[in-house]
Image: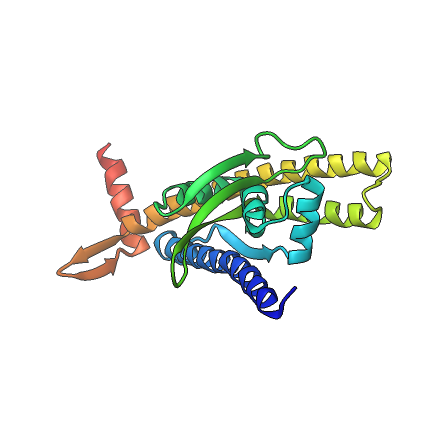
Length: 245
């Protein structure tokens, strides 16, 4: 291959990979904005942490070879949708769908596909919400719509998936049936833990809300000044009220 042709090919590959990197950078910025806004407005952050992943050229070639597709940049774009990946880890299952709704409401994002492995877990027990999202990337001479695979899961789901991946890697994907059964049982335990933690979270939020309402009832505002009603006076008011009844 002539040197100038080789350089042009290298530039095309570099530009191609940079599009996916820029897409991930842009997506991470969106997630950071959502995190900060939610923290300010609700005093709560549904996103524990995020992790991005960009497939290497070697990994892309291996995958397109397994698929039996033509080796071209266009074929790669059309056939491989997980070149750029973003994983969002949450505390609770309800947070997963809350984040998904927020992404759906962003007008510059196009949700191409949704796979709900929480409502419909994989046979091995895997749970997560997968979204294929197209995000605009503005290059120097054009705009590109780049596909990013987004996985949203709880801490328990993420821990299980990480463990399952390590076991499959260790056994070169030939995992003994006994371990497969234990992995499935562990996935069920993780799902049960998620439900239990969600219930505890809701109960704690209800307690906090009732306490806030009680505290607010003991504060009065006069000429832009706030005064807390002493507990002894509140007791007198209660006694007086009971006496009238």
